[in-house]
Image 1 (spheres, rainbow, N blue to C red):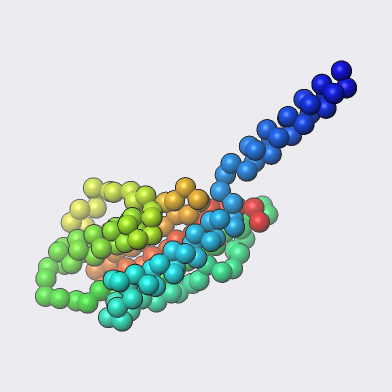
Image 2: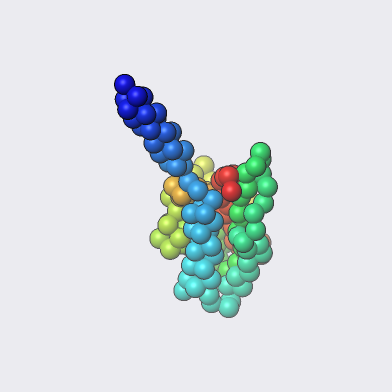
Amino acid sequence: MRSTRLLAVGLALVMVTAGCASGPSLKDAAAELQKDMQRLETDDVFKNPLMNLRIVQRPDKDLPCGEEKVKRVLRATADEERVDESLDSRLDKAQRVMENTLSRILGYKVEYDISQVDAPEGRFIYGSKEVGVMVNVYVAPEAPTWRLHAQTACLPR
């Protein structure tokens, strides 16, 4: 009888522990965000000095965001060389470049928003990763062309 109780308690503890570990961890999400920054810096498109890639905020500090939770943030800007083309064509091209970079190079699942087609004030791109990282990019009609903001979810340390 005693061994049955101990077995039941042990099994319950294993199940509770397994349930807690199923979500993303800060360590994994922060490491992924760090890799994203490195991939962006070494990407063939953005390492070109004419793109003027600038890491505004590196994801190396825990930022408080709730009850004993923290997040990491990556902010970057880059600019595309202005050529003689219409604003709509330039924004379309810049949007495609960033969507490709996010999905193919950085591994984000990008959400496509058809309502933004031909929006002269700019375009917004959203993406996420299962590890607990989200990204928002504003594709602007003026410099800098791309304004990237990626962050981890609010996670316990």
